[in-house]
Length: 401
Ligand code: FAD
Image 1 (cartoon, rainbow, N blue to C red):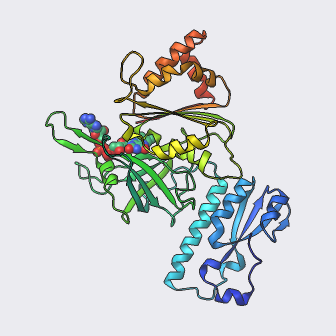
Image 2: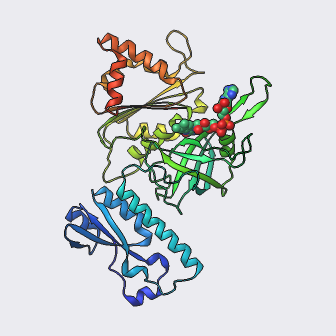
Image 3: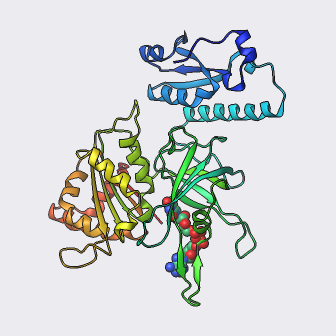
């Protein structure tokens, strides 16, 4: 994959991007390690791999995919391939390299990143995308936002959330508190370069119950109106409730209302759009998605394309409450779709590698529980006990807000 380490002369003329780092890696299978790298050095169970700065992230992912663990990362030849050290630009680049190094080390050490950035020491990202997801005729505004986090230690997994601290102060004159948002991108970001994080944000708008004044939510309206190029204050990542199991043959039942689709967008992109060495999804994913109108189906084209391409592995069921009706003429909410298909869902839940996820509006669990209680009873089971056992086994995941 990489050429041999350059000679001193070559190095004299190289830019910073050509700096090299040495990864000490354990647990790599010999063939795979050597297939990709021209000259790894093997010593006491460790492999030493020389990596150019601009490939550090990719190489780290490759190592992780092959089951390797990075023990240490050191600059080759004492971090000084270039003889131009000392300028401000160089120092800036040094910082970036150091961050990449920290990120790589952190990824190697922990399975699930938590609170890399806290409110007292947040990350300043940059908005690089802010697109409307609701089509004309739909209700409200929901935006797909992407932030550049390339100059940072931030990394995250599908199903986690980040915090956003809106600028300004609350009515008590204190800085606004952070609001959590589910991450809508995979760990590799929308561009696949590990440099971005995306969100799916609904603008909160309501009428004040007493004054009837129109109120806009502080953080959601700040985000929905954010200009590309603007800075944004980020904390996190947080959350272990909504992580995707590593088993590529798992059954994943996803129930969402509105922006509850965010983590599932990440799961589905990981399953069907990205290519990975260590995760080739061949299970069954079923998304039951509730929104009011067709025009409110967030990421509709992407979802339908995936369903067409992977009909055996992905089922897509909509519940359009203001357009569709139940058999007895009522509005079609997500719990009605669950009730319609409950015998199949119940059967899937009996499999040990079935995981169920519920994400979106608070209160959506009640109707789902009701439908499953009735079905459990038919099978002589108690839903509440069954659900408890699923929760205990880490197979029942809920994030509602
Ligand atoms: P605020 O200015 O904080 O206003 C909210 C307050 O307004 C409420 O507490 C309530 O007091 C009042 N209010 C709201 N509605 C009404 C009403 N109808 N009548 C009277 N008063 C009312 N949101 C997303 O859009 N996308 C996500 O992916 C997402 N993920 C989340 C993940 C987690 C884990 C959590 C906890 C929340 C998530 N949220 C998400 C919600 C998000 O954190 C914010 O709560 C939301 O954006 C509103 O924040 P705000 O600052 O705009 O509203």
